Image 1 (spheres, rainbow, N blue to C red):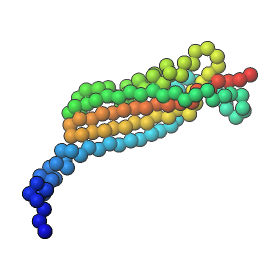
Image 2: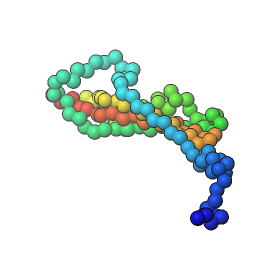
Image 3: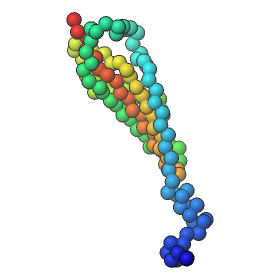
Length: 126
């Protein structure tokens, strides 16, 4: 049994359409204490409460590899947004469990890098 003509696709045309319509993405995450502060806080006692979780995001688009910010600048932008969302002014608050993730998506000559930052806000009790 032969398929109707409208369903017949040449192998070269099929391979070309896969290349044209295909895209890829990669994702990575890392945790760590990347604070530039020299203050050490030991959280071995139950003298704090977790208030909420805050996030920050930054992304850049590149065409033919040109445009956008460097990955380091994206990380700094995401961290700055996260700190602004944390509203650490007043009281004795700190960020813990900082996590950073990156995602890179690309389609032919178009790339998009996105960096996400998140952390828990704690407040120390007396």
